Image 1: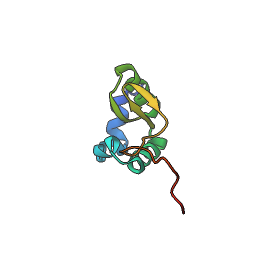
Image 2: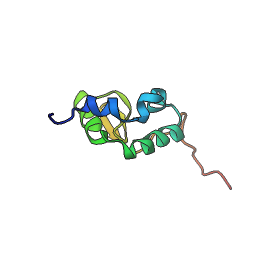
Image 3: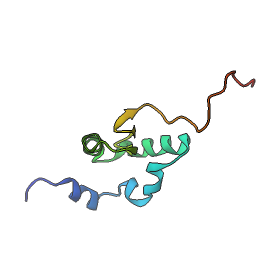
Length: 89
């Protein structure tokens, strides 16, 4: 038997993005961070990220990173304008 392909690994493993794909395209920053964390133990994490960057994916969590317009961004900003002044606790 030869080396396993990525598709073999996807079929054999319980990969989180295969069970709830909407989470990897979530709007809320909290959901995006949760999706990124779930990628941590994935056996194809590195290959997933590499391929997403090659394809210049427009958006979503790929290989544990958030991608917007084909590039990795550190975090998703909430919708709307940022506050001019910090909120008092």
